[in-house]
Length: 276
Image (cartoon, rainbow, N blue to C red; front, side, top):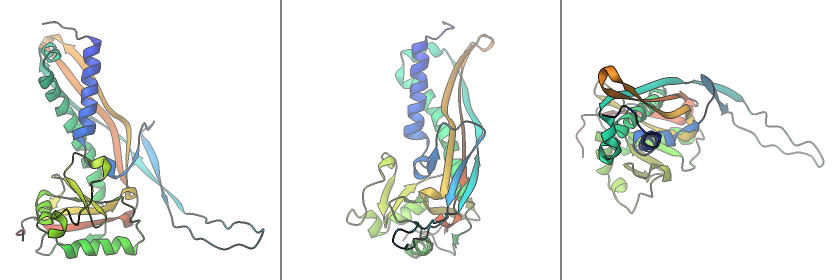
């Protein structure tokens, strides 16, 4: 077996990892505020207060809104996903197997990206209690009432992320399942199980937190959560003669942070509730 891999193959492999990460790795990154190419161990998202419009006299000075700027620091952390692969040269001519290895690393890093975002969503203090019911229209209405009362923009950038059981509960509602009520998916969510209903871009996600039988689902505005990336996906392939294998290492540097608590509502749902 050759112990060297040509540079063209390495570049192609890295490109496939990056593509797999973008297409399959993360569902939630496009639903939050993002900063890319961050230099340093942290970055800052600005939380802007409400402005007030006022009148002015003829030729007078335009009134200043004096917006409140609250900096929110987001710390980046390095993450790695690697694996040993024997006879890696064979992957040059076996595209399917090469993509299996590339996708595995991309999925792992993508799950970590979503995990960071979900962890910050779970810090929200505004909650619709579970009771003994699953996801119902009344719970959704209550969550929307909270967002509307706090002037959270209804600008097409509201998102709802729910678990598998809750997705089936939504599908049991005619308004959600019928094409007469739902709209097109959010453009960046193409290829993901999603649809738009009641001004919310709904997303199915199977890694939402659960405690005491209650699944935490979330409705939030895009600007309420921030995600920062210093390095999306970087791949290194190295030969280790003592193992007669190549080691494929994928890494990234990312972080997430809750920016505005008023832009998030947690909906607690009985994950074992009978679907109507």
